[in-house]
Structure formats: structure tokens, C-alpha cells
Image 1 (cartoon, rainbow, N blue to C red):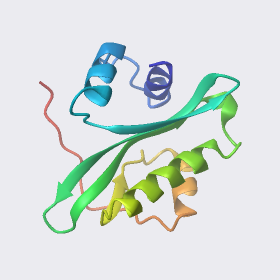
Image 2 (cartoon, rainbow, N blue to C red; image 1 turned 45 degrees about the vertical axis):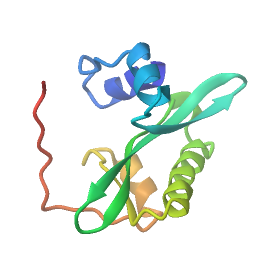
Image 3 (cartoon, rainbow, N blue to C red; image 1 turned 90 degrees about the horizontal axis):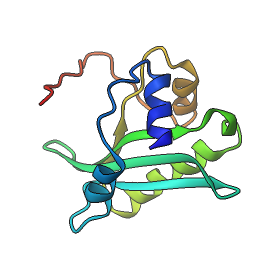
Length: 133
């Protein structure tokens, strides 16, 4: 939860987090998990995480969606994000998914540069839409 709140603060949306530890435990580690996640630890402390879920594309078939990749600020630059991102890529390939997709804020230049190292494609035509309940 600490990393989730840190990410929300970084993305200028600190009041948007409504998920709780209970929600994460129920939805990710219950009978029918809704997501897959990996964490990175240093000296017994969680310093990074990647959280993904499976979605289905009518054009591409099963796709791994990377919801969040976050490394705490004082642990950046140590290869933790790279290790987590490559874990997601390996998982998607091993599960025979057709692709992995994610979003990145257009002002987050460090993240954009990170993804460019993987020859990621960036879309410009699509707008994100959602309905809150």
C-alpha cells in the first residue's frame, strides 16, 4: 500500500486511492485472483512492484496489461524497475500472450525513456475513457 500511495502522489492524484490492503488481499490472493504481481525487496523492505492482469483483445487475443510499475524514489537507478519490467515481459511470453500493454503519463519523461529502451510503441490517437462507480 505504501508504494501505491507513493505512486498516486507522484502522479498528482493522492486522493484517488480507494483500494485497501483488504481489497488487495481479497482480489489478488483469493480463490480467483484478479491480478498477478511481483515485488522487489532490499534489506527486507519492499522497494518496487509490478502489478498486471490479463485482458482480452478481439484483434490480438490474450494480452498482459501492466497496471503499475513503481520503484520507491530512493531505490531508483539500481535496476529494480528493469528487473520487474522484464519479469512481466517473460511472464507474458511464457503464457503465450500476444503483447503486453500499459499506459504512461505524457509528462513522465523518465518512464517514457525507460520504455523506449525496449522499443516500445506509443499511441497518439487513443483517448482513455472511464466511468467511476
